[in-house]
Length: 213
Image 1 (spheres, helix red, strand yellow):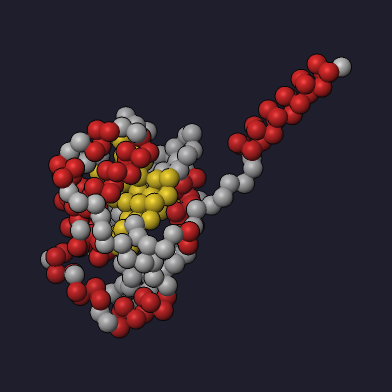
Image 2 (cartoon, one colour; image 1 turned 90 degrees about the horizontal axis):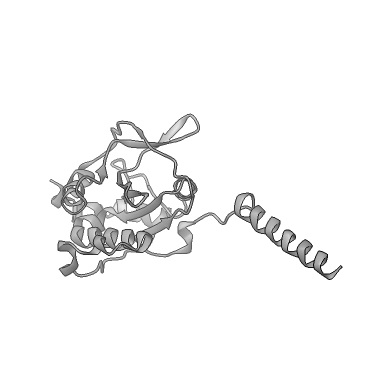
């Protein structure tokens, strides 16, 4: 009788564990959980959703500027024309860093506070659904501000390398020319709509946009 009870309890524990792993709702990442950039979200899916080839016509000067740095420090791992299918549409990463050797798929984003018309963009919570989708698909997401890319591009690359190491535990990501670069020190706060509108009124992007020319 006692043995049967033990077996029953063990089986119940196994079923509960299996259910939690496969069906229990998982907490979705939210950018409101942190107050400053860069933002990092790490997926843990066993099977990673593969991207498809797709041209993104919305890339700007900041992407072209940072692309040169990424190519230098992550050669043959940086992709600019990929997309992740979502329903009948797509999410387009600004950059995808892919290491099939480590089963690593990372979406790198550059967030600006307002667009060329002065409308707020990437405000607090605006990208939560997108971030959550990438995480559910087994991807990691790293979001920098446009100003971080402009002021500290080398430090941003080092932060990416540190994150790749954090995920893979492969120290080779840290053994490159970035090791002598100081850590990223410029970590601006996430902006809400009111803050973004004020930055647009102050034309704050003009203070650093010259480096993209």
